[in-house]
Length: 68
Image (tube, rainbow, N blue to C red; front, side):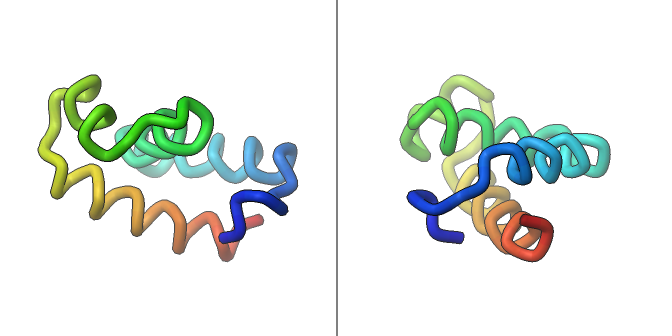
């Protein structure tokens, strides 16, 4: 997913669908993409491991790429 060329309305719709499937993964996207947080910052804010953030970010990007 090229962040610079994302249709934000399509992304918002896809993110809403993702949050219905997996709220934590959707929250990782919100912090990383919209909030601009690093993996470390996201892990700290969400009180989860950096490995979990990395894994969920990777899963979310792949899922969203097929939705947007």
